[in-house]
Each structure stands twice: as structure tokens, then as C-alpha cells.
Length: 109
Image (cartoon, rainbow, N blue to C red; front, side):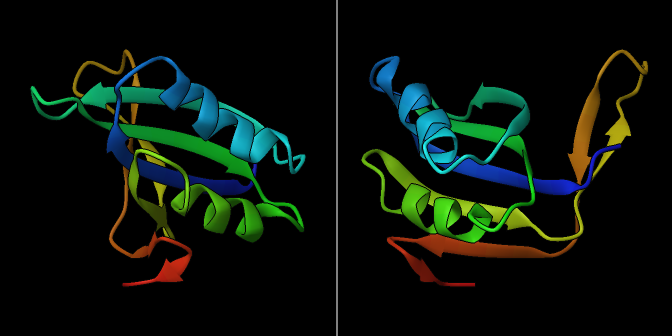
């Protein structure tokens, strides 16, 4: 598996621009995204977006910029994240125990 970081973005999906802003934050700093998945958490539009990003010299800057993006509530870097097969091995889910959380450009946890 490619070395990288698993990032969890929690934010409000009000229009398709939400996903575009998340992806473009990494791409404009030349940070490659290996995969992306999302799921709705509540009826008011709260979503979780998981991304596997490659480690580059701009990775930390992209994460901080993303935490200041419109509609993004928080960004969590799953420090010891790895992918594990789900029950029927048809897809992989992130598994982690250590998280670093950013909000509005500040490390909060």
C-alpha cells in the first residue's frame, strides 16, 4: 500500500461545491489523493469524507488550509490509520486509534 495519511473531513454538504473545495485544497498544493469516500451522518447535511493523501512537503499546509475552508467543521488526521476489510471483504474501511484534530487552522486535539 502507498505511504500516506488517512484524513477525515467533517462538514456540511450544501452543494456539490463542498466536495470540490475539499479536493481542490489538496490538488492546488500538488498533494495527490489516492482514494476518497463519503457518507451522510445526519439529515441536516453533515457528512464525513475520508481521503488517503500522499505525503509531500505540502501535506501539512494543505490540511491546515482545509480546516479553514467554508462548510468544513473539522479535519482529523488518523495518525495510525490503516485499511481493514469489512465483514464480507467487498470493501475496506479505515481503522485507527490515534487522531490529530484541526479546526480553523489550529490543532485542537
